[in-house]
Amino acid sequence: MPESSEDIQNMEEAVLLPPTPEEALVSSHDSRRVLRSRDFRLLIIGSFLASFGQQMVTIAIGWELYDRTGSALVLGGVGLAQIIPVIVLFLPAGYIIDRYNRKAVLIASIILQILAMLGLAALSFTHGLLLLIYLCLLALGTAQCFSQPVGQVLLAQVVDVDAFEDATKWRSSITQLSAVLGPATGGFLIGLFNGSTDVYLISTVLSLTFIVLLIFMRLKHQQVRKAGRPAPGELLEGLRFLKHTQVLLAAITLDLFAVLLGGATSLLPVFAKSILHVGPFGLGWLQGADSVGAVCMALLLAYRPPFKHAGRTLLLAVAGFGVATIVFGLSHWFWLSLLALFVLGGLDNISVVIRSTLALVRTPDEMRGRVGAVSSLFIGTSNQLGGFESGLTAQVFGPIASVVGGGIGTILVVILVATLWPDMRNLRALREDHNQDDHH
Image (tube, rainbow, N blue to C red; front, side):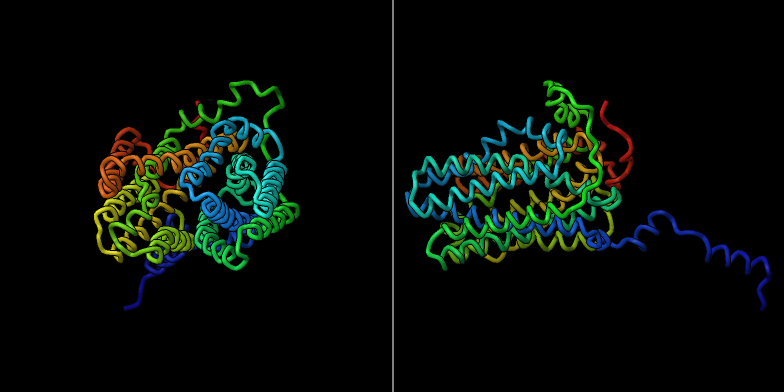
């Protein structure tokens, strides 16, 4: 039966009807489009090289100090020496990142890092004093106090706001990849060259390459407030902003306590030797499992469209992190433990991507340095304190109770955050209302 002209018109209107915003987003989203930006490619390549070098240096320092002294206490001082500058300098570091040219700040921090690594190379070659090695580590910590937050903030000056989430996913991918490849390469080079000296020099070359890439990078205009004296109010503005930006504060709180309580990785030597009985070879697999999981998740996220229910996803990811921690703590089967760590690393990466993207999207450009510095302080200190907390509770209650208790604590924190911050439960797209200023 032939169709009427009205039916045909209705069909044509249906065909021509534009898709809903969500349908258009899914159908047109291309997560790889951010890679077409020359400046973004320069940034992530340089970030990978620098992070790769830092991972090798971490292995080299640990190996050399333990080889020379045989002291676990000396090794414990490595993390302490690098976290002290972050605690002392995070407020002025954030202010400087917001006040001055961020590319220049990053280059200056890399130069300080290079000088510290050259010092380590000289001390390694001459078997110099431990005190001088710790001074170099303090310099490295000072450099990282600036380089970590400014490296994240620079994303906002090389890509458009609608690409922040994709840019964060790809940057997370290369960071996690360096965490997998860096330690393995560092260990190989230490064995190849029979010492750490050459590792420091190779890392120096990688950092110099990053500086060259930065020089050729073109950045968008940086929003800077009118120059003035660094009054205490301006130094504390990042903390004040987080206090009033509830959804971002909730995301940082979740990440902080997940790392602080779920410190299973710091007890891996104990589990490998005394519980799973897999020796140093099995320990190597266990130490890399969470990073491999994070890399796989980062690559998966990079090819997926933006989050539609970011708050719920973050809460479930951190809760899953706690469950995976409990499974690892209770497991006496090596392959189950390996799987738990793999899942743990993947879920942690979801948390990192959502938190980092929120920090970019919800923070005004002129305050991103201060907010990033505060975030780096919280996450950095929670890594150090998390290892200490796990070691202390393991000494008192045993390693299994320590890890399982940490996983349970993480789940309780998720419930508490979901209760106290309903904005987090209801958070949908990360860019939602990003033009609105939550800072009152």
